[in-house]
Image 1: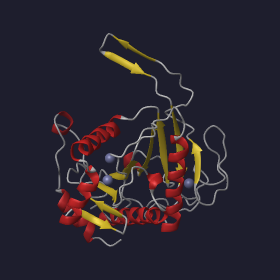
Image 2: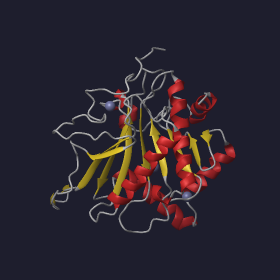
Image 3: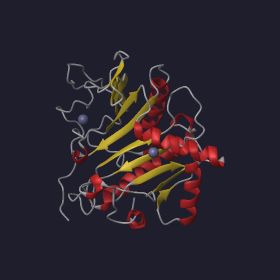
Length: 306
Ligand SMILES: [Zn+2]
Ligand SMILES: [Zn+2]
Ligand SMILES: [Zn+2]
């Protein structure tokens, strides 16, 4: 077990482009914000003015322009905090901002999907330790989301029930893959986990999107996120890197009773703070394999203090 250097120890970093009052690339200056702060990404991968265009070469090569919007959400003015170290009321404010952004961006006629995601830690390519997430909104529903949508839709049409409501009920009756839960949300290692300590947060009430969460549910989401990431940090006694994000109904103007809001946590670590899982060889060519069982991962996470 190797120790990694501690995460950012300063509350304010004069060189950080996300800290209050600092200048960003391109010359914009952050306000002296006191809780959360949202701005359009200075290096947006997607632009709203992208003209509509599509084409193909024969039937083999098909392309299409993708308009979109990229935003950054700072969780806190404090450079040294993380979701695990913020208090629940402060995380609740972040949840409220996610709801606002999902509704506001999703209402734009050229946006059909809003992806909220956080890359945490250098191992996941996060260039800045300041607590923040990104929002990428696109004109199309992205592939992985469309795949989940098809599965949920087929299940609903064939059986008349929600796939994830059923899955959560089964997991709660068994208990062996549950990490922690509160009155409204359950954190578990999914049966199909590929990353060693992969997790999902699933809402107990059927909500297609984050905007359908009531006040007590938003508090509970903030609380379960803090509890899960606190356990992660204690696993190897080091800041735990991950990519996390929400999956929910697209904003394409249609009804999506099949969609059940959930969050995925996809952390790369396997054996220690420095030994990660690599998806190589057979996994790149054939299919993923598991290094540890989801039941074993859940048991280890469950046994840790929060
Ligand atoms: Zn900062
Ligand atoms: Zn459901
Ligand atoms: Zn999902």
